[in-house]
Every structure is written in structure tokens, then in C-alpha cells.
Length: 435
Image 1 (cartoon, rainbow, N blue to C red):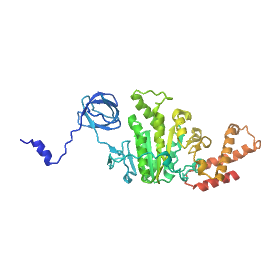
Image 2: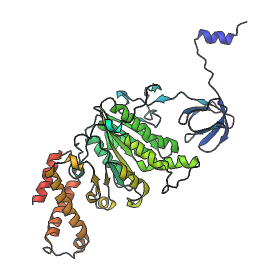
Image 3: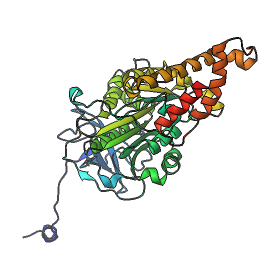
């Protein structure tokens, strides 16, 4: 006798797949422990959990051993209980194409801007980091739209500078300006641990509709689990690599590496690992260096020019993450709170900032010009207390007199964001020095 249910399934051509089911045996606020899978899933795999109310929750595997599997639960989940079933979800690969431009996604590549986004099933191999000796050299100097970068701190194609600053000094605004002005085929932005309204502001106000036409935003807000925030930069880097391998010049903006490191610390602490490397797990160095190394010139025509922001607590450039990044990146740009407080944006401290592309990005004549300007800035900095307190008498020192005449006019130029070409910026600097 035939089973009517089986006949109905066959007539509708429904393929029934009996996925291995596990059960929840322990729960915390943001994790679930499950047992019952004959084959343990890989760390990083996605799992589905079904509550007694019938709703589904997507979680990620963070620990897997012979006894049980730990799943990282999303924030705001409700209804999950002991005994609820769980099974491995077929994951998708992050394989962006032209239709990703203008979109905002989460660290798993799922759209969060209210529109559908086609995802490609897993199977295409992930982009590989180019071998060190196969990489092309860094390329031509790039227009940035800011006087400070067009003169003192050049950025070249494939370079990876860092922007170091405390909170509220203008990091995100500077990133948005660089995204608008630097010539790139694609802009990929990773926003790690930002407040929700900041993600919207960065998309709508800082980048704007024109900037979003060639951009992909990957965002994990501060209320997301630490595993998701840590994954954010990995996903953004993979998106950038995919476009690079298509021969495109990609501008990758990461805000911020500090929040990535903090999320990594949370994940490792939950696993029981000690944070005994200046307050961070020993694996932090390898994680950050590995992600940064994936940017830069490719082996063919594509390349990734990357800018990484570093949140510096109390403007302490010797704190662990800042100290680590200075040794990894191709230069550091320091934003100073005192400069910001007197109303000059971007608040770049020229004397404390360095671009490692200067030796091959500027000519000998331009290098001499920049050296003279830095010298006058240094002279003014050393005598600033005397100048501002009225203790200095004009004519007492020729170098200080020149610095007093030079620095205020340079400050006006450093506050400019107008897309002035590099050569004209250098000519304006030369004119200031010749007066």
C-alpha cells in the first residue's frame, strides 16, 4: 500500500533532505551549546535554530569539539530554549559583482539596506593574498582633494597608511572626503562597532548618493556580537580582493582597527584565552597584520589602496594597537585634538605624521621644498609658547620671524578640501616659502 504523503511529495517533485539535527543543551545570553551532530561543523559555519514558536535564528559556530558545539547567537534573539533543534545552514560565499555597488551589507554579506541582493553559492575559491615577490611595486601618486595629502603626506596607488586619532576629531569625515576625491574604480568601507545612526550618516551625508554609486559598505554596529564585529573587516577585505582580481583599483577604508582588535579580544576571552600581550591576546598581532597584508598592489593590473583608522585613547600613540599598526602600515597620519579644537579640519599634525611613499613619490626638488616647510613648522612649534604668551619680540630671531609669517598662511591652506591638483598645491607651498 502506497503512502499518500509520499505520493504527494513525488507529484510535486519536492526533494526532501534529512539534515542532521542537533539539540540545544545549554544557553547563555549570547551563546548556545548544542550536541547531536555526528560530524562536527567547521568553526565559522552558519547554523539554523528553530524555536518552539516556529521562528528561526541564524547563529555562527565559534567552537567545535568532540563533545559539543558552541554557537554565537545574534543580539535581540527571543524564544530559544533547551531542546530546540539546530542544523547546519548552507553558507554562501562573498563573491561580489557590479550589482553590489551602492549596497550596504552585514559581515555575512547579507543586505541591510532593505533590498534583495543576489548571493552566489559557495564553491568559487576565495581570493588569495598575492605572493610577496609577485606583487607589483606601488603605483602613481593619487589626487586626494586635501592640501595636506597633496603636499606633505602623499598617497600612492597600493599604499596602506593609517589615520590615528582620538574620538570626535574627524576620522570618519576625513575618510569620507578621501573616498570622494581619490580616483578609484570601487570604494569598500568597513564600519566596525559604529553606532547605528553613524552608519546611516556615513552613507547618506559623508559619502552621499554620488559616492555610493561606486561603493560597498560592510557594517557591524556596536550592538552586534563580537564574532560579527570581528568578521566585518575580513568580509570587507574579501570584497576588495574580489574587485582587485577583476583588475580594478579598489580603495578600502576600515574604521576602525581598534574596534576590530577589541572584538577579537572579546572572542578570545570567551574561549578562555588570556589577554597577556599588553591587554590583548597574543593572536591579535597575527590577525591585524594578516588583514593589512592582503591589501596593497596585486600581481596584475588590480590593486588595493587601503586606509585604516586607529582609535587612540587619550592621544597616546604608544598604546598597544597604535604601536602595532605603526610598524605594519605604510605611514601614519595623526589627527590632533588641539588642532581640531581651534577649528582647523582635517586636524592633521604634519610634524607627527609620516608617509612612507615620500622617497619615491616626490622629486628631489619637491622633497627639498617639503623639508624647508617642515623646518619652519618645527621652529614655530618650539617657540609657540613664547609667541602666544607675548614673550617673543619680533626681530630677535630670523628663523622664528619667518615661521611666524609662514605658519598662519599654511594653516589656511591645510584646511582646504577643494580638489586642487597636486602640482598647484606644491606651487602654492613654494610661493609661501618664497615670500
